[in-house]
Amino acid sequence: MIPQISYASTAPELSDNSRYDFFSRVVPPDSYQAQAMLDIVTAMGVGNYVSTLASEGELRRESGVEAFVQISRETGLALSQVSNSS
Image (cartoon, rainbow, N blue to C red; front, side, top):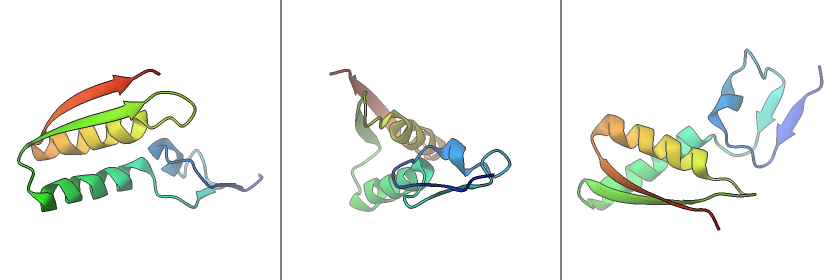
């Protein structure tokens, strides 16, 4: 087995040690970033309606938004999602 270290992979699937036991990363997975975003939204007291925006493409961030949507819905925060394909 060959150890793998990523400087940019944030996909939560890569945290599965049973499949990727020789994988490591230097950035947190999207689930950690999503929790931090929710904590910020909650601390700012913006109410219970938030919009998300993600760009598709080379620097794919949809999984981060998906993680934020999931964790937000679990806490009862209403979301509006917009996707930009450009």
